[in-house]
Each structure stands twice: as C-alpha cells, then as structure tokens.
Image (cartoon, rainbow, N blue to C red):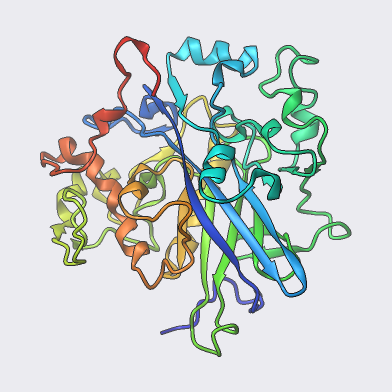
Length: 394
C-alpha cells in the first residue's frame, strides 16, 4: 500500500486525535435543492438536512485530555434564535427542529459538557452555531476570519444580527487568522491553508471559504504510521462543515470518476454480512452534466452562499483529498452517512479498516432513484425531506 501523502511537505506525526460523529437529532424539512446547488433534476427536489456535530478528543502524555466540539447543530429552543433568523425561516417556510441539545447528547454518552475546552464553529448559520451558552465560561468559541468585523455585536445590541450576544458573551472568542504566523502555526495541507491547532500534527483547521463568511473545516489525524511501528496506517477524518451541502457537488470528479460498477448498490440496504450487491454506474449518466463521468452532478449556487464561485473552488480542492483512500470526508448534512457510520459515543478512528470510505462514497446516488427509474428497497427516499404536513416540527 502506498504511503498516505496528502501533501509532500506535510510532516508525519505520531500524534493523533479521536473523532466521534454526533447525530444532533436536528434537521430541517422543506428545503428545495435549488436553494444550494443546481441544475434542478426532476425527482430530486428536496435537500436532506440532518445535522451533525463532531467530538474531537486530544490526549498527550502528562496532560489532561482536551475535548473540542466542531459545530453544535440547531438549538433545541430554536424559536429563541435572533428575530432576523426567525423572520428568514418564516419567509422561506423551512421547518427546523431538534429533539435534544448537543450538551444533552454528550451527557447521555458519558461526556460532561463542562469538559469541553472549545466549540469550533464552521460558520455562524443557525444550524451550526447551536447554543454555546449551554457550555461553561471556560469553553472558548473558535471562529473563522471576519467573524468579529461582520457579525459582532449580536442581537439584541444589533437588532438585525443573525447571531445572539449570548453565543459569545462571557467566554473567550478566538478568531483564526490563516496569515498570522506569530500567533498560529500556519501550514499548507494539500491545496488548503491550515492551522496546526495543537501544534503537534494531530488536528488542523482549514480555510475553506465560499459558503459563508469565515467558513472553516477541519482535518483530524486519527491513526499514525509512526505510532503503529512504521506500518502504513496514517488516516484522516476531514470534517467539511458546509463546504458542500450534498455529495453530488463533490462527486464524481476528475480524481474520483463514476465507476463502471458501484458497490455497494445504493438502492439497497447495506448487508450486515458485508456481501453487497452491485449496480452499473452507467444508469446514472443521465443525471451527469454532459454525461461526463468525471464531473460532479451539481455546482453550488443559490442565495445561501456568500460566494458560490469561491465555494466551487473549495470543493475542487476537497476533490483532491477525496481521492485518498485513507481520508474520510464528512459534511454536516450528508444524510447518506446515517446508513453506514457508527455514531457517538462510538469513534470513527478505525474507519479505513471497516471500509467506510468505499461504503459512503456513492451512497448518495440512492436519491436519484426516481430520476433514473429505479426503486429503492428499504432505504430512505428523498421525498422524506419534503415539507411536513401542517408545518409540524422535524
């Protein structure tokens, strides 16, 4: 097996973190796909919007474990969002909901909210910033470039702000600067500018602009070849936030073409035995732009992008890393992950040996069952994310 080398200048490290993906119990129904990407494809009208958060745990000799959260999802009491956000939700008729807060989910899984050292917010949108006030004053809030200039003060000091003053008041507000080498350990990770957060090669924050002001992603080293006595076991989890909203914006690509045979079959449930059926890739050519097996199905567009062109460049950068067999790329709203991954309190650290990269890569194609004239057996349908009856919560 070739050595994982996502950047020639990226040093090897024996230091790792553990990563857990948290199903926040939140979601949004009634979001048309055209609000975030295009072109419109008949049979794929609704964007699936589950909401994921991530627990990152960093251990080092002679030091206490440091616990980070990447994103907080939707606050359970979402009707207490700022008036500007509530007005926008009402105007577009989305239906958000959350049965639990991330702090409650952590508690249920044996992690006390008081142990969280920092909440890293990929960006300020209401389905990511959650409710930081549920965490104690020692929990810092880490945000991307431009947060203070564009978003502070929050509501009520600024009645039109999309964030609340309570999101950051009484805690350290840490704004990243990907050009300040005096304060941060700034590095290059493949095509991305990054910050080595713990300064030991275990966890990087990535500048991934386009979707929102100051949007950031993260790259976590979860296994190390050095730690594993020289065996080739380096592997990384890339937490993308909203760098893309749907895997069809990322794939296919020049680095990951649509294969002639897709395994496992996206139209069928995964087999517990690991013996999966297949389907021909050719049946999806009708939804590919120009029937090009090396071009993504969608491109970012619509009113919810700060700069869609910049967002597309970020996706193109992600496509380079998506080709690495030991990099698991996870977006905040990728519904297809629910069928494959083990969620908190389980950890993702052994994903490569469990085959999760291959199992998740083309799972999203199930959403095109109607578009290509196929039936799905026992998997969720895209229509499940249509507006709920009577405007009930998710």
